[in-house]
Image (cartoon, rainbow, N blue to C red; front, side):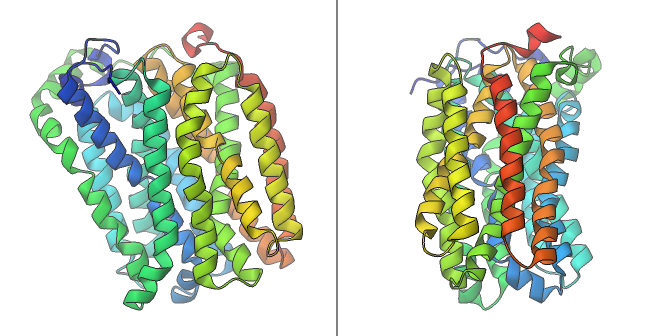
Length: 418
């Protein structure tokens, strides 16, 4: 792959002074790509490792079903709040410095939350870790636009594949690691080391550009973006699609292992089935952005993903044990909506400024919508004692997702709708 990137100084510069299509420096472009992939590996491990060990955490911290639902909802709340603030941070700090701070927050938060016996402290330190993920969520599409403007689909697919791989490893190994060390705390805490490693590629640029960032901010780099996705139909359709697919995604990450446990699977096997969803999503994460970039309209992809998810939900409701592998395969395909919407963020903006504005609005607003997912699934599960009502709720969310998908399917740009 020949990376088409902005000059190497864009690793540490502010978004306002970075031309998206400047001639590349090979070394700088590959360093950015490596840094992005390491960050992406960390973006869901803190969530899926908790999903695989949710029952042990509930017992260890004496959490009720509703409190456990709030724990699984916390990622979406953190992603919404910090995601909305990220454009403001980007105008004041370089992407490199922001990513250093984000990964440090993720590492420290994951470490501290396994050292406490208090449910409240567990929630607060989890929120610290998730704040780091929230900032990185918004930055990665912007970095793709700045450094690889002519390889949007390919690079988005690469980092989404890394994200999916990290998700898979965390879900599959959390229970075995916990059992090996005799505590769920080890199964969650081990991922702090991976977050610390992701700091390293960004440190040189973060330290080198400190003075330059201060000068840029004083010189007017903190001016607000002229792009206002919240005032456009496209912006809201993107947010609703992102929110609906995230709602189902986080409900699955938080509760699928528990559903399979209730169906009679051993904890290790339930964790592996959850990992199967994300493992099968690795090739889908690479394929989906490439397809989205080549198609004139996204409607065929949107309807195919809806069909796969619908069949999976119905299977989980009526035959969770007998058809478990088939439902996992269909869920994995349906969750291809995530790499699809990440790619669409880049495809629906002309500039890095438009990309970060659209990314922040779609993700922060979308995660507010998604926050309902794990929480309501937990409440419905505790209230009804089964999975029919929670699955029915996910099917309703899927219908909303499909409607929004139709609106974002045809090519256009957020800058044109200001």
